[in-house]
Length: 105
Length: 385
Image (tube, rainbow over all chains, first blue to last red):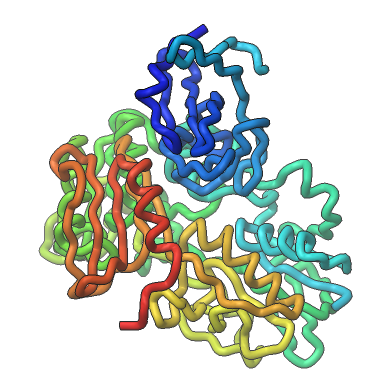
């Protein structure tokens, strides 16, 4: 488990990048209050998805506007064609943690 | 429409073919490309590909297999007959089609008299990049002519590879027309930050050397030693094959905002298309990647009888010396620019361009997150000036 931050430090609609792991992951909190963790690097070209635009459960890459569904990791808009990996998020005692492994979940 | 031909097999052509299928076209779909290669992505050619970090630049995906494209690679279109929409190809074939997508792109401009000189390159195609990559060895003296996006990215990559780099620019500052003097100066600074010499206000007179380039001579007589030269002075539309077709040709194939040309069932997209822009309120030939990705959706719809103007604001990015530059909108002479976040000296900032009090452009340097938010404010056309 990787400790990400306190819940209060990640407002709804925001994302945080965790680069203590390689490749880095991005943790999102949607406007509805759900948490998602995915690979931070877009599968199309080198850009950080944590810098992207979050709308519902979709993140849009800041560089070329590829879209990914945070629930599944699947690309939902071009140009990306490959999925990003998703990771389970656990929120306990006001702390966000990610079950990170080298193996795709 | 039973047969459609897409002439040009790069991003704009492939994207239009995909869009035609996605929008329900189930007839025969021929894609003609003059290069022998399968469609590939060009932006990495001056960046990761040139640096040798990545050679994965193919654009085709497994999903394309199901779209039933009829590929004709290594064949150039020679002419379009406006009466029966037949297209003559360099391999001797003649395509008879009901719909035509012109996506023949643009080609790199050469300095007069330099094409074919050993050591002098342009960078536009995969083959160009492979040839140039072989010459960018540590310590090599590289002169880049033109400090635009290609020139700056080549300089940056070559520096990363250990080359000794000089950039020559005709204007007083790089990217002056696109970004204006304030931010052009910041881009000039990037070269200096990384040990690249930038010579501005300089016209190249000629390239010297017998069997191979030896130096670049400037109009003021200065000679800049060079073992390799890259000419990055822009691109010219590939539209000569359309002479006599009846299409209006003016720095590109002229189209309306929906990619329609003056001929029925003939549309043009991407770098070759001089399309009316609802953002610029003028005709504009966009040479940017995002346009080549997005405009095809409009072109396909127009070809299938549902013409609607393409609305996306111009957007481009450039990676130079580890700095990511993103720009959206359009700057015109007289627009004001102000930095609203960050610091230009730290190469991390966001700047907005305004015409009066109307936002017309946004530039971010190493500010992708903030840029994403501001970009949305320009997603819709601004009012006419």
